[in-house]
Length: 138
Image (cartoon, rainbow, N blue to C red; front, side, top):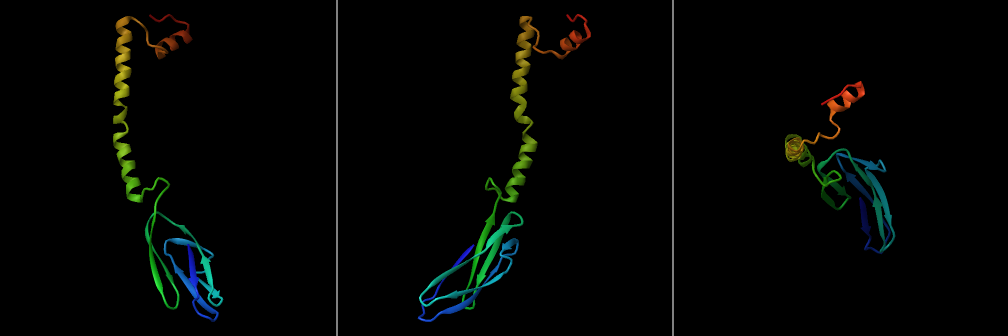
């Protein structure tokens, strides 16, 4: 997070900017930083915020005269919050096996067609085992 400050006065000034961000690790570790601004000058301070977990948080930036509150939502790589990720995991766990039913039906139909034509299924485990034992399998 970058905080920019402007000094509209003809004199230099100093201010202490504080950042309050529960749920985040700050770098630098100081929650308060001092900024010195030249006359009619500008300056900025920066913090790197690293979230501890996903969710919605408030980050507060204050100085002697002003306080600003920012809402921050932390999501995962796919842009999902915690609830959405858990919901999709549950849906996938429940319905994932169901989505393989068409594949199994297709394999079953292919097997029936091969049996009807008198063609053996490729790589039949029984035939492979029988061949390994040196026995004949019909």
